[in-house]
Image (cartoon, rainbow, N blue to C red; front, top):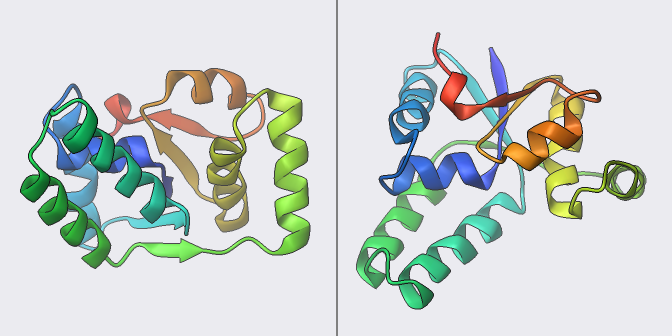
Amino acid sequence: MSFTIDASVVIKAAVEEEDTDKAVGLFDDFGEGIVDLNAPVMLTYEVGNVLYRMAAKIHAVSMEYAANAYGKILDLPIRYVSLEDHELVDTLRLSISLGLSFYDACYLAVSRKTKSKLVTADEELIRRAKDTAEVLHIKTYGL
């Protein structure tokens, strides 16, 4: 089974919060080869930015914890999918039509390109995209 993941799922696996157990379960299944994980290349930047904010702005984690977690995330063999120029233009159209950020629309575009379900903790993304793609909340994950 193949999934596309967004930054919210990765952060839940790295930092203890609600539904961390589900995110860790997804990554455990990934490590065991039960599922494949896809993401747009920008995931690495978005996760880095969230960890920066958590360490430097809200002090939810230490700088060393953020750096170690980020290194481990970068080591994961996630399949990073690039979108071609024409796909990016279509993604912008999708973003505008659904009222989503371009970043969120990129996750949808990768899920479409890879024919995988999008897994997120972003309820707004789920609500806006439910009629255009199969989007699952991480709290519902379980095989």
